[in-house]
Image (cartoon, rainbow, N blue to C red; front, side):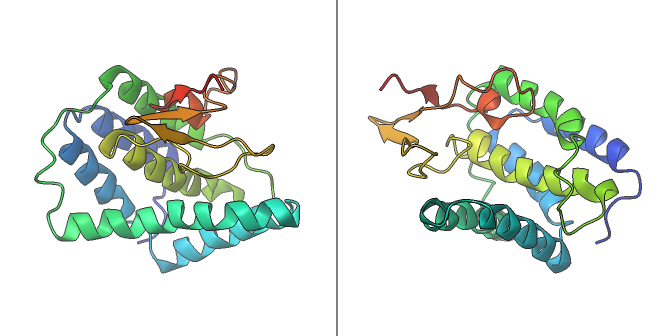
Length: 196
């Protein structure tokens, strides 16, 4: 499907519809309905941007983080489509775990998607919000359908710290360190700040 003509309006309306979801399955179906709009060309552009962003990292860190990011983005994409096509969201009747945080995330999407990129994306700047939305959808699925953190567990951050799971609770070393950046996933993540 082509990129919506009026991206800001599309994202605003989609965000409002998403915010009206109260259950995990309903949230997953809503996210999937948007994810279905991304075609192979879109995925190639997203992959190209990811590869470019990874190329500028030191090689030792790049080798550690690349598998996590690829699986997190493209593995989630395929998981969402598979669940949608097999009606796998029907059984997820539990309410979204933190409805206030979820609605705050949905409210952030129109402005967060509109943040200018770095200018090195393989798509026109006018289409950047569409591709930003894709990444937010993958994170939203993880955080509000699966109750997982916004960053993949085990993925190392610079310095070696990582999101970890302990006794059923996710802890993140940077959870509370991004508060001033309104569009940062950290502000909407269900993980707790890691004290270690």
